[in-house]
Image 1 (cartoon, each protein chain N blue to C red):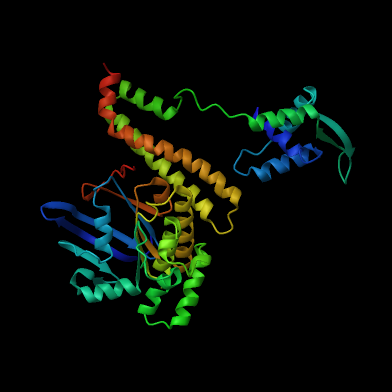
Image 2 (image 1 turned 120 degrees about the vertical axis):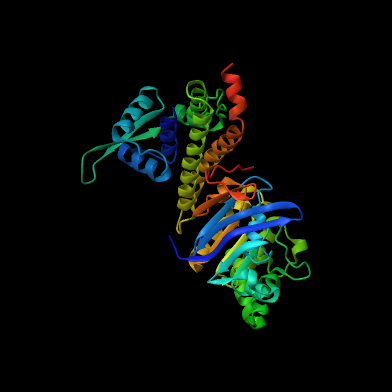
Length: 228
Length: 178
């Protein structure tokens, strides 16, 4: 088993009176792809958001490279998400006013790269995801699958240590979903990035090295889960 | 019979001898069980008897003499008919998975059925992960990907069934034991 890069212990999170996570322990190793699966409403997205530092856990700790993210300010966590983490959601959430290349270059510009260099790197990533010809198109002129390929390119462009992907293929048809996953997995294997992947589809979970099954906010030790 | 039709298909491009057909079969269908030489020659014999292939010549290149076969017009027609024909969707539920759940409920109870379904799900997920690794391996051919997808699709169907059946074990037990 690889060294722990990111770990959560005793993560508890409620929305008002409704508990979403009730003491979850999870470890992600360097370069490891971990799928979080389970029935709708089991808390898998909440767990991803807590691990990515987007949500703050009510109790428990989230430790990334020996630092407890729950003790960090929002500004520091936001900086971490720009530099060391990459995020990819079900609906790409591209900036509608920017072209594909500008969307993908954005994380590089925020990290201090020059405009020209950032565009070059962005074009390379668009090519990897098979959408190089859309570089100067805005999201409104692209299909859902094309937008999601751009969003995946944007999540990977900075060479993040951890990628958080929440139902990354949930809005795609099967072939598009498979192609996005295959390109993403190949890229993260090369970069040595770890991935936390939330999905309810078995063939998508099968891209992971390991699967954690959540049920009612706790890890289901039988690993049964329910897809669909 | 499928092997016969595959051989007819491999002969559609021109005459070939048995050894060549075996190699072409194993290369083109790498996920299928490799053909034995005996099977190739036995099949060619039947195809020849039925008038679907005919001997087209002998050649001897640094080895034993080999007989080449070619498609006859009848063979070409039979191949074309097979390619046009839709395979019937499986008419019965004949899966050993299904049988085992029912027998577990009859003979040993709900817990045994649940344990079996859980273990089977883990085995299916493991196999699906292996197949996914095969198709995402650098240098995987389109043939590898398409063959893996076929198996993954079937495993996925089984997995969906395993999951919904897990949720219905108690109900099913009531039904099969009354």
